[in-house]
Length: 499
Picture 1 (cartoon, rainbow, N blue to C red):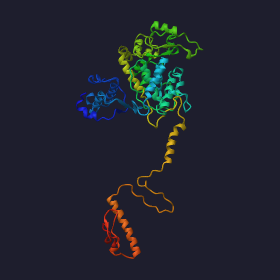
Picture 2 (cartoon, rainbow, N blue to C red):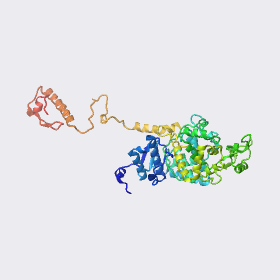
Picture 3 (cartoon, rainbow, N blue to C red):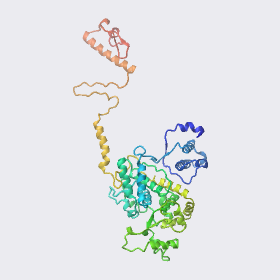
């Protein structure tokens, strides 16, 4: 491959990742055709992120810096294949648990092979976790240390949550392979990706490095979470509060291409809709009649858990594709929130676009899932923890066990002194304290001073013993520490040394 003047720069690149803080890949920005045509899916997503960041920072295409353009060329040439966003990194467990993603993928595929409802359940579980307090696996907790009722007990979750056992299986497997390494939040993000891929979506990268939260409160949901009865204005408001766009709302609603809903979630549309009509007039009459056959009128003593379940997409209910949008345009949207997308002019235009282009929707859906996976993540040793069991917070003594062991090991080691004290001898009350020797090579000036005091010390004892200076012949020839000769003439008049 000929890469021209960029060859010296690219050959000097030693890393395979680029760190971008607070990056949100923008789907509204398109790359130049000359670049985009040579990108694969992962490179196109990364390049979109780079362009989005540069455009947001400078607001003009014609003044992109050379660094921005170089990054784009590096992406195109495959020199960059990992993106670090908000502290999350693709391939985060490459060194600590390299088989983690593969193990999770195998478990998810096996579970889906036995129960096709696991795929939509994992995607829904992932979205419900991230949308409230961020992607911290708080929805998996059976209890909260603060004594709060956990999120999973909310009416928006409860018995409708599917895939919890799959996450437990993945966690127990990884704890055997790599103890206390892979967080439950990352497991859930990987599992949701693998479920989408198993349902027909092209694979996409998931950055990892999340830590698990230590609190879960179902009171966080009311007023902050979309419900089946919401319309577009309220749904858009909730998504905007979480940093997501109206397009993200339409894209993520496409997950209803698989899975289904219990009858009580839409019974208001087929029974007692209003005083003028018993059935919602926006529903296709044949579709409404079929729903009434599948869902008989509710009785006061009916158990919601025993309510029948209806697929969102009657055509391809087990394949994640754009058929959901075609069903909406045909007035066969199951929930009120589904049907609302074609009643609003702005969202209807998006629905029509995605109904025509399945590949476009799949690409944008993957990018929307990546954006959701970065909502309010916990990163760093000081935040959250890596749970040993996804349903329970680690006990306090378990969290302190490792630091305590490190402290005990440090206590067993000899104390470390600064460099000028490392060679100090043990001191005793009756011993004469001595200055430690300097632990660096001899220096001429230091040697000269040291030699001066050595000679002065000898001269003192000579005068003390002899009562005065002695003849020069009585002193043997010797050398000072500095390496210069010290003769009897030097020592004849002690105190007037000449080196």
